[in-house]
Length: 277
Length: 199
Image (cartoon, rainbow over all chains, first blue to last red; front, side, top):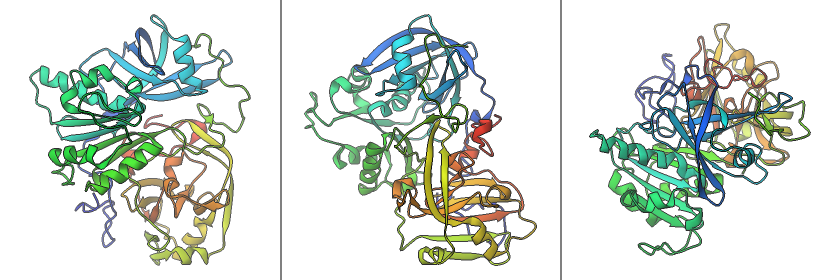
């Protein structure tokens, strides 16, 4: 929001500083103390050959916004601790629990343990929800672009929106462009090509898509442009749609470029990246 | 709570602050915004606010200043640390000396052309603890890591080390930056695990 009319610092006679987010934007109460708590795993689901969803029941549950994440902490007998953050996959309309979908990374210290050692009935130490930027509140149209496990926070948006509409509440339109190498590796494939098919474009880099016949290949401008246009993501500013982009660094770097090539202003794009460069 | 069956990685390094892991040879990229197109030709760095002589440097201008290097560790709030790495550029002390810091200055707001901002106490960017850097391990700093020039404040979590840094505004008060408005800690000291507001 480089054209913001509000001063950044209140100082007089100084040039306006550019602003990534509007000073008027509401920030969720993520800064409030979120203590560690021990939840209980009540369900484990295999999503892809390498990804599993852990459903965790929480005594001190607080509603999250789609896009927010939880920390998971492991503690060794000698006191050593490791923690990682995972996006909430379940919508806030599913109270008292959070579902975390964990991609098993090669040599993953935390993801490997979760996959090998954690099952139904086990305790799990978590803290959250956190995140104030990569969040969807339901009041603005959004183009969602996710690759691999980057689909997790964006599926949360679709699930939350469906729950809102089912409950008779209003919700702005959204569209998900979900990328994976193959259908077997696509997160929540049955849901995205079933109940959410209308709001989802599936992009597979190594296979043709069965329905609609998109030929195999990486994300292309034509996967994005019609949805960006329809939702208003080319307009930018307060009246435009937001774009939420989540995935690995190579995926998000390529998608950022494509989005801007089709005319999405840079300041409409919110990015969440993960993984080594 | 002990996690049944968890022993963690072996060979933990004493240079790792609590809750951090060694990322080894890789260097993860984290950004909140689209990567801006800043080049050596277009990059400038302005210091203004509570200073005697607001000044703007360009690429050639900062290279004409006495150089300085950092060798050591960096720590990201997302729990990775990179140990024994190196950056080179110029100490912020050199720039601040040239502009003349007014006694009223207590804090700085570092900003990038993308609109990213972060706030720091003045004491955290003086005394040889903060740099502008354009080389990482002997190579030009890549765009995804904040090149051509980023800030480096290695004793704090790395979100304080603004990528694509375009200026420093000296203030007579504290004012939260981007992540500080979005739930992260005001100061971000890794050894105290100051990750989130209130930690």
